[in-house]
Length: 233
Image (cartoon, rainbow, N blue to C red; front, side, top):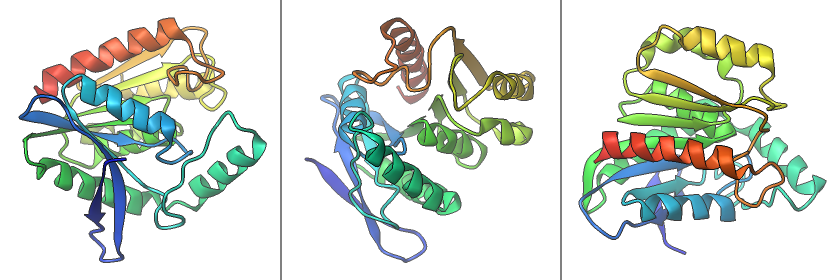
């Protein structure tokens, strides 16, 4: 599969990133931020989908400091989930943000990139996408069912680019109190947009997953596409 190597900015080595190329260039780039399952078949398919819309898609391996090349299947049983949670708990999120910034720089340097870059993350990646909204110069940010955002919205004044949050109303990892805290914390932030999808659970946009909801996913993905086109060209 197509990959590029990216040097870590702390000098500790390099990591791989799945690369999906658009048919027409120049084009903007989207940094695709993994769930807790690594750069697996789902992340590669999502990257291919973004490329089919006319953008570069770059999905970096954020578990490389613990175990390079992780690709887990969330529908393959409890053992896969246990490994995923162990990797998530072992991640230094500050270093993950540094790796995402290095990925942004690599994306901007791609031949045929127009210099515009956005982030799009899912679950753990949804949290990291929001963290990038607070601490990067990307042109837009999209978070699908990000976790732990209620603890981050106090820094909402740091958001400098359009940021969209897709939240599942029945998300067991983001209960109603957390959803309310997120909505309240971002209510006065002009660049932030919170969309809550009634009756759906965490990972509602993961095609083929047990929580997949075609209606909600289609609506969310349409909103995502509109923001990418507006901000990345």
